[in-house]
Structure formats: structure tokens, C-alpha cells
Amino acid sequence: MFNAVRMLSNPTNLTKTIPYQLSAREVHNSSRFKGKVAIVTASTEGIGYAIAKRLGSEGANVVISSRKAKNVEKAVNSLRSEGITVEGVVCHVANAEQRKNLFDVTKSKFGGLDILVSNAAVNPAVSPILETDEAVWDKIFEINVKCSWLLAKEAYPEIVKRGGGSIIFISSIAGYQAMEPLGPYSVSKTTLLGLTKAMANEIVHDNIRVNCVAPGIVDTKFASAITSSEAGKDKSLSIVPMKRFGKPSEIAGAVAFLASDDASSITGETIVTAGGAYAHL
Image (cartoon, rainbow, N blue to C red; front, side, top):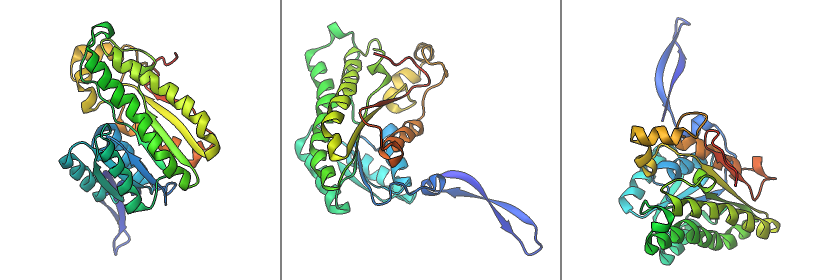
């Protein structure tokens, strides 16, 4: 909710202000996604939640997902309290049956799919690349890359049925500037930049646009190891001209733009939302 004031006239023609709260729908006051259906993975908190909230506040029917049922239930209740039409599904993106159920629920509840936002990612260990355990490397690439590809592959025929739509991957500034000691994670995020380009070229004639958003360091639970310590904060912000961490709502704004008709001529591109940090390969 957002704080605001409402002006009311009284019988003596004086006005007074009464505090009240605006829902997310009232704040954005847009219906550019009315009639659209969106899936957002890893969306019960942080960036994913903010994306689901933004799309839903602009009229989309949203399906959120997470590995834990209690997190899904909490997020669904929170979004519904904002006036957003949303369903929640327990889904570990590496589980084929749960991914199938994610799409099945989306179709049964809302009739199809227009927008996929692939946000799920992991970084199970911190180490230099050449000291990374093979199992850790495999897990990072399974979730961050392979499952992004699988979700897009499975979403594709559903979006085709709707006459077109949008697929958006969530990468990272680490895809441009490898972060020590997050080498394997950084490489996985660079891979998503290439996946975006390759896939966009292949399905553009199906009226499906494929784009990517590369956030900088955002103040979320996922990045808490960096944002919660003064040393980590100082080192991280040394490469950020704005000298602050990003906000989940800022990433959501970029995603909403790419998913909308405002970006109808944009495909195969990555928007970097990283406070001016250097972002070139």
C-alpha cells in the first residue's frame, strides 16, 4: 500500500485531509496489461514479487511461484489485498512435473499465457571459478540457464496460441562485470544475454519478443550477504555512479516496459538497471 491524502469537502465548504492508502492498482492507474496473463517465477519476495505486483497492478492476471507453499500463500494473500488477480503455485523450476503444473494451473485459471518472466536463480556457494566444486557449477547452470531455457521452451506454444507475447529473462550486472567470488554465477548470467539474442531471432516471426533485464545489486534477501555489511556495501557501490543499491520496484518497472506494447519494436535486447555501472561485454 501507498500513503496518500484524500481531500473531502465539509458542509461549510472547508476542506480537510484524511490519510488513506492507495492500492497498487490505484498507484499505477494503468490497464495496459488488461486481459493478459503472466507467469513470474521465484516471485514470492524480492524482485520477483515486485514484478508480479507491477504487472498485476496494471491489469494482468498473474501466476506466482516458489518452492515453499507457505511463501506462496503469504504472497498470494498480500497481492490480493492490493486488488491484484493472482494465483500461486508451488514450483521448483528444476522439477518437470511442477513446471507442467505451473502451466496447467495458468491455463485452467486464466485460459492461456501471454507473458513469461523467468526470474529463478541460485548461487549455492561462493568461490573462485577454478576452485568451484563441479556439483555447485552444475546446480548454478541447471537453475539459472537450463531451467530458463526449459521454461521458455514450454511457454512458447502457449504464447503462440495467444497470437504472440513476451518472454523476459532476469540476468544481472554480474553478466557484464564478473563479481569475485561469484564467478560461476556471473558466467551463468552472461549466458542469459546470449540466450536472449538467440531465442529472439528464432521466434520473432511468431510475434513473440524476447528480452532481458540485468539488475545491479538490489537490496533484497538474495543479495543480503553484500548489502548487509559495510565492507561489502562499500566495495559494491564503488562501481555504481549512483552510489546506492537498486530497488525491486525499479526492476519491475523495466520488466513492465519490456512486456508492454510500449516496447513493441524491442526484441533481443537487455536493459541494464544498475545505477550507471559499466555494462559492456
